[in-house]
Image (cartoon, rainbow, N blue to C red; front, side, top):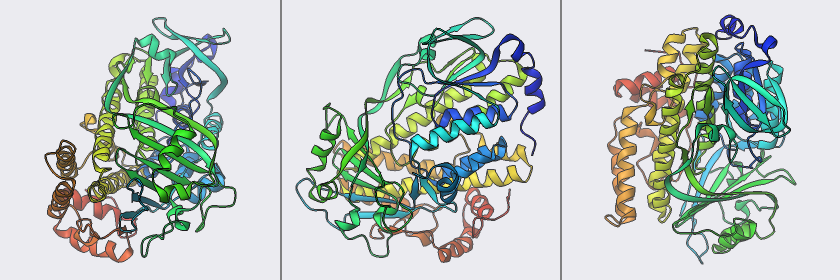
Length: 553
């Protein structure tokens, strides 16, 4: 497949070298900036990558889910940057991208009550239903790798000299660096930074959205495998083969071992740890390792896991979530972490990054071809980013409501898992059309008609209706109109009544605490799907029993 619009893009910036103005300046040092720059450069645009607009903030965004991996494949295929496809396969990540990264085979949940040892029955594990094997990315290595990929495809990486001012000059943007150097671009895209110069040029402010959240994170050494503290569920994988969320009233502690290819992490491997707190329940503290361990100490089983742990690298964030009041104007765009920030929950960060890169690269290459960077051309991206942020904030509110009670979390987390499966099926279908050369049909699947719904691809209305009902039950439990037990029971009733959920998976059984997408159940699903709703049938049949079905209308 020929890189998209390459000839047109090259013609559009034919004078770039003579007037020292590039087509697109991408600000940021992370994965989003690197992937976007690589896709644009491969598509024929002249691209300059600049350091972030402020001090680099370590942040979460380390976990992939099946939909994330499919998006990496889509970016690799659509923009002909094959290296990005390596991010989709856990083995390739370790071999080609980052030796410090790990495998994401499970999402585990263990609910705790302060002062009491963990009850083994209050645990749940999902074995990630992915044909790729998903990953836990060690971001310092992955981010650096992404910039080398961008350079390999023709982007110029300027270095760490940050942008301190952005000035609209009518037909281009003048960027002033901290060193005093000035550069010019027809369009500038900021992807990260706590106080971005581009946001200042737009007059954008940070507007609070959703439940107020505090985040304390670290890469730590000597965190014990939880399997050494509490026996895992029957038939389940070791907890350390993926992410374990320790849940408690008002928050959760995410524990993710790196370099965990075997049954235990490798000797000396780091563990990514992130504490997410409802700021209404847990007001501001110091935001450091001492505060994190003070919360850990309230739960004996978690404290045993952390008894010898020490931090290597720490980060924290307050006043999350937020959205920029303005995300775009002529020739300027805020993208990903420069546009909005939400609570890091269940692989949201990287999934958002992959969605906006896929969409923005396509739209920006069209702008380069047309020579039109007016604000109206960014309208879809702004609507999409606001929809994604609102959707995640809603999920966070549901999670906080469910964190007080294991059975309510048991129900809510199954609805989340169903959403990841629906996303993966939709993206797989689009990928197959794209690889078959049918780009118009692929674009129908991969560009939402309702971006405010919070997905860049076409949603499944049946699933969104279930999500709405689940959110309503969580709100009723939070407000005291339902007990958590009754809210959980009602959500399970909704799940069992849904026509789009294969009954063979046991999603509606609250006592089925270990989920795995086994081959036998896939066969049974293909028999069931003959009577499923048409919109579900087309997704499942195109996927096939081994994930290799042919695209079907």
